[in-house]
Amino acid sequence: MNRPTIAIATLGGTLSMQRGEPGEGITPSLGGAELLASVPELGALAHIRIKSLSLLPSASVNFDFLLQVLEWANDQITLGAQGVVITQGTDTLEESATFFEYLWPHDTPLVLTGAMRSASEASADGPGNLLDACRVALSASSKGRGVLVVMNGEIHASLSVRKTHTLALNAFTSATGGPVGLMIEHTPRFLHPGAPRMTLPIPSCTTHKVALLEASLSADTLILEQLVEMGYQGLVIAGFGAGHVSEKWSIALQAIAINLPVIVGSRTGAGTTAFHTYGFTGGEIDLIRKGLHLSGFLCPRKARLLLWLVIGCGQQSKLNDFLAYGQGCQTS
Ligand code: ASP
Image: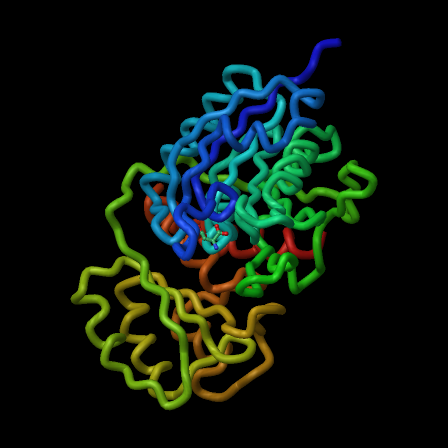
């Protein structure tokens, strides 16, 4: 029987970690071949092409590296892979998935997974997650759905999934709308239809900086006052509630928005920003009038990635379209 080809890249993270000496902490050390050996079922599923691209804890992944990973993934499609899977650390997995979502033009799915327990633990979840990720990547029902995150028997859309627990096995959740699918008897079952997708070209500039700041009670405006001079080209605020800031911040942000795109999202972790409900200074109506963008369902850290990408490809004029696309992805 002709088995499909699946391409897997490993970047590091807990899935690749094990303990060295007793008493020492776990560190990334398992490359592709060792990971493959831990999932013997994969051989029956597909012909596997596996590549260790790094052994990084995911806090140290950066945009330039993600662009290299994307180049590798695009090459795999050209070489005929029917599915592409990337394993990485869970700490920043939601951000990598979002980054790739905006840049992945193919119908063939790109699936990200990781592990909450290292290979040294008796109940390691890495091998099961990798196997599920491959099943999702090869499923015809995953086609056209862009970038998916598979963890703990659940399939999540990249724009809604977040790591919402430090250590639990079920650390990944999509607070608004839930997972888009589940693994049922080893088969991916999608609960919602796919939505039309929008992607950006590969950014031609990668040196610009976009800041992410969180609104907090009685916060001063010192950093805001210096942000433009510091050389930032964009700003995202994790605002209070439905996308709000204090009166002082509203004034400071208005001054910044004359020079830079500013997006305000919500620091709450679930739900959408409002657009036409609150009328106080610092509320969303005031911020929109002052030229700021509200991020809707897109959480601030994902909005920062979008802003960085649109600036990098010179497509700032499409920012609102992409923010609206984030809305659609949550509801379909
Ligand atoms: N706890 C993390 C993980 O799951 C460490 C990292 O993000 O690399 O991989």
